[in-house]
Image (cartoon, rainbow, N blue to C red; front, side, top):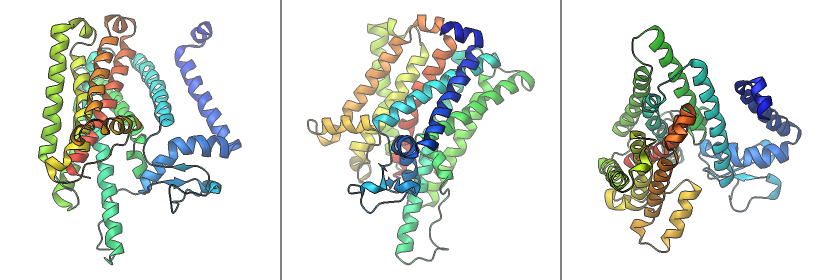
Length: 386
C-alpha cells in the first residue's frame, strides 16, 4: 500500500480517497436513499442541522419532506428517522474523521505553498478560534429574533412591525454547529492563502502577521455585530460579570495547572512550549464557561441556567448531578478538560514535532479550536443570554 501511495504521490492519493468516499456516499444516497441517506446521512448529520436552522425541537424525514412532527417522542414509523438539534455519538465520530481528513489536506496544501514557520502559523490563526465561537452566537441571536418575531405575530403585531430575522434558512445553516466549523475552516484557509500571497508580493513581513491581522479584523466585525445587537435589541442582554467570571476563572485554572507542570514535571511541556499554555487556556475557557452557564447563571444574573449541547458534556453533568450540589454539576467537566489538555501537551513531545512539524501544528490548531470555539460560544451566549 505504501509503495502504491509513493508511486502516485500522497497528494493524489489523498484526493483519490476523498473522491472515493464522496462517490460511495453520493451513489449510495441516490441508489439506496432510505438506507444510506435517510437513516444515516440525514439522521445523524444533516437532519440535526436542518432542525436547528428551522428552530424546531426535532425534524422527521417523512419521505424527504422534512417536517416538524406534532410530538418528538411519538412519531409514526412511516415518517422515517427523527433528528434533533445537537450532536450524537455517531455524528461526533463522523465529524472527527472528517476533521482529520481535512487537516491532512491542509498539511499537503502548506507543503505546496512552501509554508514554513509552523509554530508562527499557530499564533497567526489564533483569532479564528475565537471567531468560530462568536459567529455561532450570531446564529443564537438570530434564533432568538425568530422566536420573538413568532411571539409578536401570535399576539397580533403586524408583520411589518415585528422583529426582523437577520439570516433565514438555508443561509443560517452555515452558522450552525457543526457546519459552522467548515465555514470557519474555509474562511481561515482563504485568509492563510491571502496572507502568504501578501507576504511574498505586497509587504515585507512574514505571513503570520497579515494572517493575524486578517483574522483579527474578521473577529472584530463579528464582535461588533454582537455588541450592536446587545445595545439595540431588547431580547439581547449584556452581563459583563459573566464574561469576567469565565475569563478570570479560566486564567486562574490555567495558571494553576501550568505552575504544576513547570515545577513538578516540566518534561510534559518540552515539545509544545508556550503553545501548551494556549491549549490549556482554550480548554479552560470551555470548562469554566460550562460551569458558569450551566450552574452559576442564577447567582450571577438572576436568570435561569443554560443547557448543555454536547453528549459528553450532558453525560458528565447528568452523572455528577446525583452526587454534587447543583452549583457544581458541571465542575467535573472542567476537570476532564484540564486533564485532557494536559495529556495532549504530554503526548505532543519533541519527537512528534521532529517527525512531522507541519501536521503536528495543524493538529494542535484543531485541538485548540475544539476547545476555544465551543468555549467562546458558551461564554458569549451566557454573557448575552441568548
